[in-house]
Image (cartoon, rainbow, N blue to C red; front, top):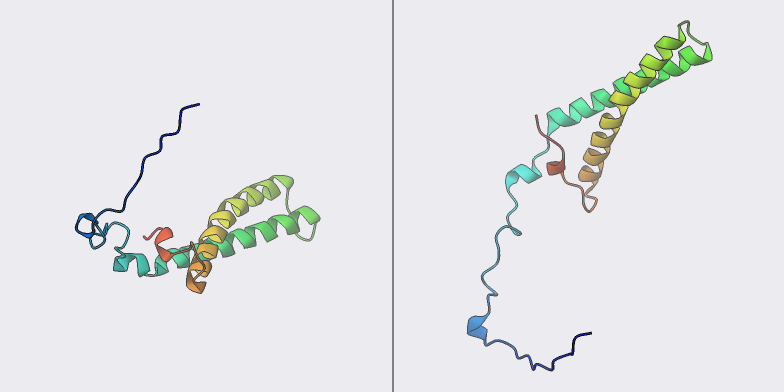
Length: 112
């Protein structure tokens, strides 16, 4: 274990401090971060509804409420999950951003 050195630290004089020299990378918030990506939100809602309907169709076919083969069930289930997951995620991010939850911004949604 290294020996601990007793070094007396002192406060720098006021002319050597960088209080008014703030790094602009952490204070700059462009308008593009506050802009709402309406096309992406519409696409997310479409994917959410499409995925939900495909999942419901696969459920109804598998339980026998609708006619169909088991291969249709697996195909609709796969496509439903593939559409539902990104739609749900983007819709959730958009909702939390709209509510103002900490850590969620509209800038985290890709804009098309």
